[in-house]
Length: 339
Image 1 (spheres, rainbow, N blue to C red):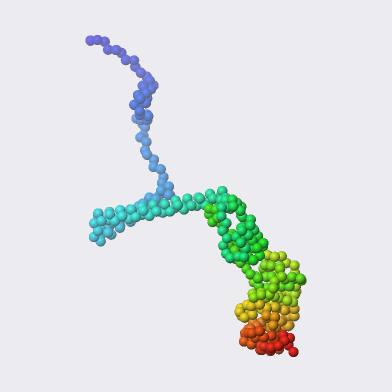
Image 2: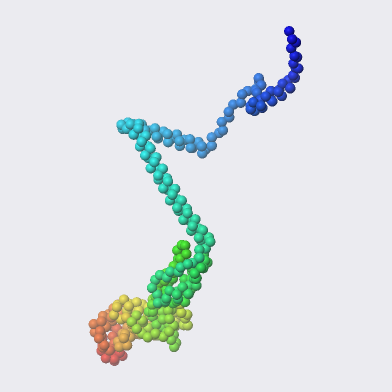
């Protein structure tokens, strides 16, 4: 027989290297276990609290579904009917979720537009005036200082309202609002003349709220009541009148008389003389003088005086009504001065 080739005996280290090379070529990365090696065991990761709660909730949902399924089966429903009912419920729930998602998306886009507009400062393109006033739209806009192209964020509402109420005295209140994307709305509340107070050679004219609306001399007409007996201090148009401590009682009494006369609807204009608080006098239509005296009960006294004027002096009679010494009101025709 032919002689067999002799194999070179390999040392243990060379054998291990050869085995590792064959293992890498075959794609097995894990080295073979030795005889004494214990196979590795899988160590389970501990469950977090959130995962544990989710697992419990899933179990509850499954238990609830099983209970509902059994209850429906006990009532006579078939398996297919229960499956179809659950499918319909899922479709409805899916539709509701889709609608909610669409609404939320629309709201998000609208909010983004609002935030973007305010962050960039939308330019003013239109100014709207609301409310009645003796002033024109151009006058109000000019005083407000708002111009086309102004940054809406740069408009100071309080300052604009203050300028309008002060520089345009026949406007009692002003309010400024923004309407996206580019509109400014100015709402005004008008006021009117009500009381005249002597101011040396002139008169200051107040409205019901004591706002000085005019510093020009005015003729007495319906809706105007003149107060004589004290002089007003120098005042500024568009501000609110504050009487001095010396004249405060006279002014307050005059305001009370004006309010009662106005409510009567008969004496729509008068001259109220409060120079002497113990001898208050009212002159109506330059032909009837009412002597109220001390005015202990203004409302009752004026009610009686108005009735006397209404029934006894409704024409053009001239005379007086003296209430200083009694609680009655009689019209005495003739002179406005008592005998």
